[in-house]
Length: 119
Image (cartoon, rainbow, N blue to C red; front, side):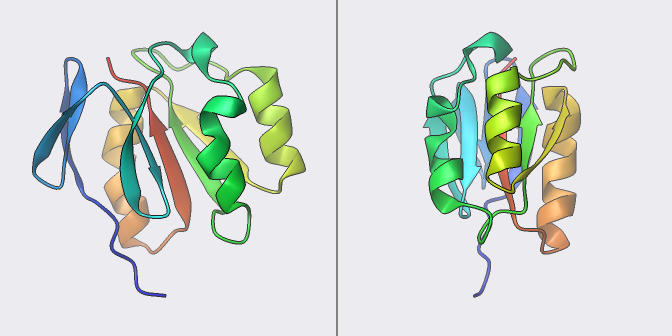
């Protein structure tokens, strides 16, 4: 299947520039589709908030790249446990680092979902 992953051109106060278009707020990219993600803080991340990731499943997504906000922090246990149970890996880092990492990983053809909390 050919990839058409959106590019993450920049990030800044309150949002992200995705494929040339400024998108305010947090961002969820699943199956190469970028969408608004109604999450403002890491403690708001729940399995329900990541439903599109779980719906796509391990056959489509090898891991979730999670940008945790301004500081790197451990995601909630319920999210970690459900990802592990579903066979989906988890890489988490502050949003700035995750934003810089996303394009590199998609260029390598990695099958990832990306959830970025806006700063």
